[in-house]
Image (cartoon, rainbow, N blue to C red):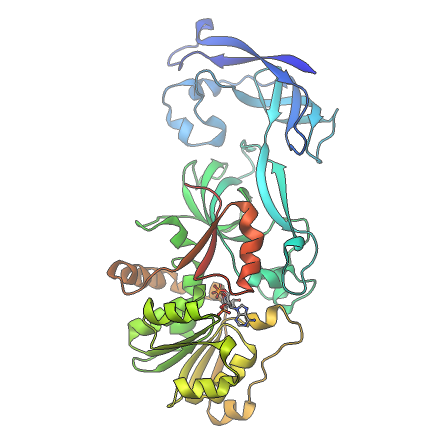
Length: 459
Ligand SMILES: NC(=O)c1ccc[n+]([C@@H]2O[C@H](COP(=O)([O-])OP(=O)(O)OC[C@H]3O[C@@H](n4cnc5c(N)ncnc54)[C@H](OP(=O)(O)O)[C@@H]3O)[C@@H](O)[C@H]2O)c1
């Protein structure tokens, strides 16, 4: 059924006292049906609020327009939203049914079409082995870009989101990691998935943020995030670097490499460093930090192409494809005839055992991650404890989030290295919310080169 929707708009900006001649009653046909799959809700407006503050929105400029989501500037000819009460006449959104009485931001008009709030990724079920496409679902939900003034929420348009191996441990029906860190809590099937990301504020009920601010923090694997009070969100100064860098090399991956290498391993110039998953997000940076310090650095990776990049592009002293090696202990002996001083462990399993057996006395091992064990419940590294004792090895697990005190040092050092060309950024970017599942799946197949990021939208 088609109805005629009548609504009020302004003909021009209104600078003084409003007059009848500033306004226009317009009408447009509105089909009271939705495309299949649409999440829109059509509301028949019943009561709408009339408030003096609307006049400031009608001005060509008012400082109030930049200070609150409820006060954004109006464009002549466009709908005017206001707090109102209405009745749902058509709903493509499972949260609302026809006949529901609703309150929210509606138009100064007969009907309001509330648009969906974008797509997001969730899991359909817990994921206990290697992740598959069938474990994920692309969903959409409506989002009003208007906020309740008391909510203190911030609505962020997500731009670049991080893809990280630890998300798989959050997806499992059980992993001890889920109880150990606020960032690693279990993900419930059907719910949003949060991640480190960069975005732009589109609406703010929080006085610390205004529309247009660039921000970094815990956002959603989706188009938009409604950040609740207390959520991790900070203003972002890109410092002249691409926004994507702030998700990877200048974000948590970078901090992980920096804190793990400098704080946990306490390296000295000339020491011999081995790093696994060396062309991954964290690994490539550890190797580059180590080279910048003047260490001898060897990395392992899962393909010939990666080995070539490590040596030719990143300047590693040596690199090998662990998939082609039959005895990892002998392989490491070949690359480290004088032993390893520092092992930065990203993979666990056999590689951890082989590294321990090649460590020098007083060697340090930073256990950053054990990715080879994430998809296989039974797999465990079982390094020789006799070696650990008699070589007086220090083996330490760590979480980047515990080293936020180093963020300032990390950022200035890494920015300097980037500007001087001492360190190269290595990014692997795919596009669109729908590419998130394959981006995660491919981490466990070794198909990323450097930091895996999904670009949700251009700035
Ligand atoms: N402690 C912390 O705070 C913290 C923070 C971030 C990351 N991490 C950990 O650090 C490690 C690296 O993370 P990232 O974000 O930098 O990921 P990444 O290295 O960019 O991607 C994962 C890489 O791991 C390798 N891999 C996958 N399955 C493997 C297996 N079965 N055996 C050996 N290698 C395998 C693959 O490269 P190949 O081609 O080499 O196989 C893949 O590209 C992970 O274990 C992660 O959990 C820890």
